[in-house]
Figure (tube, rainbow, N blue to C red):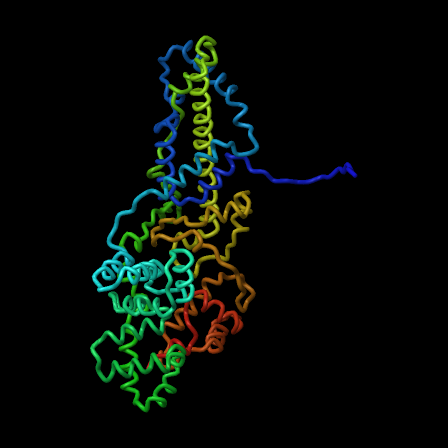
Length: 484
């Protein structure tokens, strides 16, 4: 039986222009520059330079201005259906997929990769065709660090079911042993312990090297936890020999594949989105507009649409199809120009709020002068949503008189000192780091001791909070910081 039912529902729907604005907002300066170049190349309606409407001289004929205004108004009316769509039109989705496909097809130049280097060495070995196929598959599963992260059983199953090769785990292990003899030493290891052993076994064998092999093979867990006294008792060696063994092992490369990494892959170019200049007590914000030119819509295509609307004799099927394409590109160009302007305004207002909240740091460069600040604080001053502030602060950088900083650097939680004053957790972390840098490495400071030292400075911080801050700074526990 059919029943009628009345239901109320609230639904948030983003227009295509809003979606485009959100995506542009997330891009840092260097990616935004590429995005603008891409749009200028792909959209013939979009042209670089100032809008011709704003550059007309006063000597122009007033009659021409009036006619042009009429033409532009008619064009706007003809585009009305497109500008009020609630959903993304099909052609926009098609353009999006075409761009993604083109990005995937872009060739990247650079030095030889780790996989190519291993395949070259594989081709120099006296192996059967079957063994070479197994070797090629194994090399394809070695990551950029040089490790084989998949089990032999998984590789065997793939070769049987996907490549149609009848192989066993023993066959795969045999070829893997060959690959583990390749350069760089340690490649093809399945874990850190095996990686270190492969490197030690390829070195000239001395008494120290053999002891290091024993430590890695039989006492690896104790070595990882820095229980050196336990290792010394197990091997019956003195402290000097233990120190030599440690030097032998720590000189190895835990990520052998990194030695083959291309410079272009490891170097990250940072282009600041903002520049803050300090002059006495005055701060000046400059937006980095390099590579983002002024853009306007081509007058030629606007006239084409206007002529089509006025000239009924010109409305052939071919012309109708061409005008439909031009309208779509006009719509896309208008959206893009508006989104770029909106992005610029949002970035500027957000950065101005950050400068206002962190003025003491921008004037002095002293990290201890950073005030507690979260996304909600900036959102309150700008009137934007917290999600918008999050997108602005992600992957954006500001150049100051004291260096280049990511925007996330200025955000931190707050804690209270002994007098109840709100201070930034970054200040506490900075003091903790100073304590750790000056500690006796033979007897490093524990979290309890650090908590007590902070209390003496007026910061009431619990031991578990000290441990959390230490982990956030990437500093290991006291036992792992200890040296012989």
